[in-house]
Image (cartoon, rainbow, N blue to C red; front, side, top):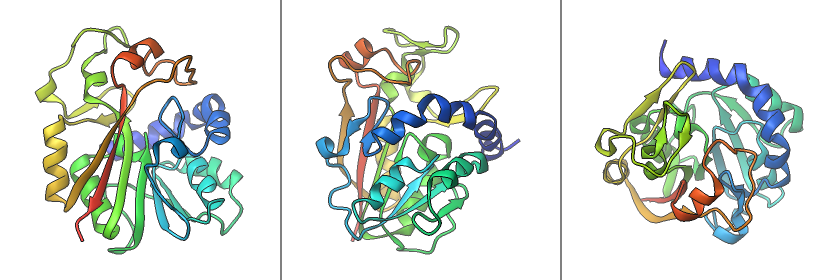
Length: 246
C-alpha cells in the first residue's frame, strides 16, 4: 500500500474520533497555530489576508479556512481524507470555502494560482516533502507565501517509539530522519539542512523559522504530543515561513 493510500485509510478510520477530541478547540481557537493554539494575531505568520487567494493543505474540518473567510480571505481547503472533508462540509455552507479531495504530492491546481499556501500539522506531515514543497511552490504566484507548522526534528529525535512518548533523551538518528512508518500511517521529517536545500531547489527562500514555546500554564487536547514542561524547554513544533522567489 502506498503512503497516500495508507494515510487516507488511517484518517478515514480515525476522523470521527479526532474531531470529537479536538474539533471544538480547533473551532473555538481557529486562527491559531500548533497544539498549543498560539494565536496568529500574536505570531503574524500569514500577514494581511484580505482578498488573498489561500490554500490550506490538510484542512480537516476546515476550521482554519472557514475562519479566514471572516477576514475576507478567499480560502480553499484540500484534504486527502473523504471522511475529514465530510466533517468540513457539515460546517461549511456551499460556496463559502471550496473543498477539494486530493494529495499534496500532486495538487490539482494550475501554476501561480495562490497568494498563500499554508498548513498547520496537516499535509506537510503526511506527504513526502520532495513532492509537497515542489507542488506548493508551483501553485504559488511569484512572491507568494508558503507557511507550515509541524513537529521539530528535536522533538522527533526525542520520541521514544517503544515507550510511545517524548523523553529528554535523544533516541533517533538525526541524519537518518526521513519518514516514520508504523501500522497506521506514514509521517515525514528531515534534518534542518535538508529542509533548507529542498526549499532552495524549489525556488523558495526562508523568511523565518518560528520555534513555538508552550505558553505558561498551557493546556492542549493533544496531550500525547509533548508534555508542556518539555515544550517550554525545547521546541516541540515550529513554523517554516517561506517566500517564492519573484
